[in-house]
Image (cartoon, rainbow, N blue to C red; front, side):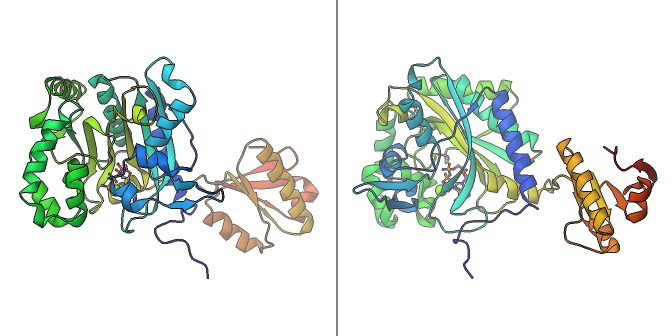
Length: 413
Ligand code: ATP
Ligand code: MG
């Protein structure tokens, strides 16, 4: 038996309606906020993620699915996230000189070689949005409001918004040295990865999952205490905007985001009750990204929402009762000419856009009626030799059991 790859999932028809319901709300909300859908390739040159996500991140160092293409000297990776690809696409398609802001959304699968567990898989689904060309905190508030609005419409409770600011290129050096001197004094207790991060990207230490590092990071200097006046002002304005929009949040200095390109405002939505992998949405500002990929200096703000974690939260809160379409009509047929007649009626209804089914496995009448019940048909029509002869049959309402006679050849619903 060949089995699926560890950390991937089969989503069967019993569950796809829930996914589609969630994704439908994501699409609708994104479009109500003026975001257009973008589709980019599933794989890209590895270099894009090394530069766009950052070579000191866990994603690039440990989690990417990277392979050599058949063409020589080319390394390719399955996308571990969506932002770098969208940034590449806007540069490559000449969008950087369009009217700002640019707003894009996507629903994609991403690939990361992580330890599979509840809420963490190797192929996972993400709803992502990116906005380019506004440095205003109003843009940050808009992105956050969109994510909050999706969560609200899904009916999810107990999802808390945590926000922070990690500063810009101006305030980063001072903060960086404060961090380095703090962690230097505890260096021997850090994990090996963090020891190297201390030189390359000390901010990453705040995000380390190693329990020792995590404990040490708790008392580290906070970004919000080292912001330049401009970043401080922007963060204040963001908070005011959220207050005015009645979007509840907590300021949480431990939110620093795992990817290298973040600057300024960062945020996460954390769901209670779904276990350790509780961040259902993470995002922030990435003002240096487009430039670092060879485009103009163009600011950006976006987020990624983990659809599988949203599904877990929906299940946990009993919001997963979303079922697929029920057949409007099941035509039960007895005898070979009735079977042909049933096919003819089903075809007529389907061409009119209705959902009709008839027997195609040769069941007995009793078994067909049982099947009609199982698939939840709203109506059934029973056809045998005598019905064909008189051209009339009984249409039965499966909910209340009432029946009425219909003309077989002119019957539509
Ligand atoms: P985490 O800290 O949980 O590893 P992350 O910071 O690596 O998350 P992002 O890169 O910000 O995650 O991705 C955005 C969202 O995608 C996350 O908030 C989460 O909901 C979801 N996500 C990330 N990795 C996975 C995964 N391996 N399986 C399922 N969902 C994931
Ligand atoms: Mg991660």
